[in-house]
Image (tube, rainbow, N blue to C red):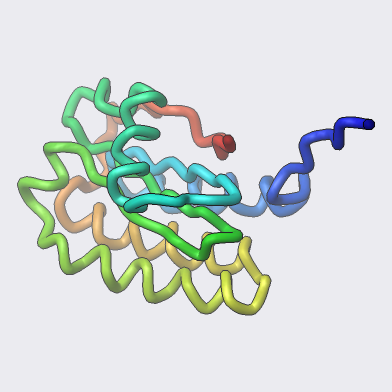
Length: 147
């Protein structure tokens, strides 16, 4: 029996679009945005997002302002997990609006458009509480992680 090769969730061009959206959103905030994709999530997506957040070392930002957009494409489950600095300043209800912008793209198989829209929305929210600073460094990779 042959083993099927791992097929990425997004094509190279789709990944490039999403990474460009992350970079654009981060131009207006000192917050650090990451996107993680996987096909299935059998449990609570917020708990899974917390595990991924920690695995990626996202708690290591100076202002504790990392945020993860977690998406399980086949399960159609998603979550936004914010680090302590964001959690203390931003009403958790704000993330519901982000997820609402993402879900239509998942349902219509326009995943990169949904992710882009959600990333821009995250950037708008972060800008209010963590505006871009002249000495801002990109502390976390903008690349999309997958498992």
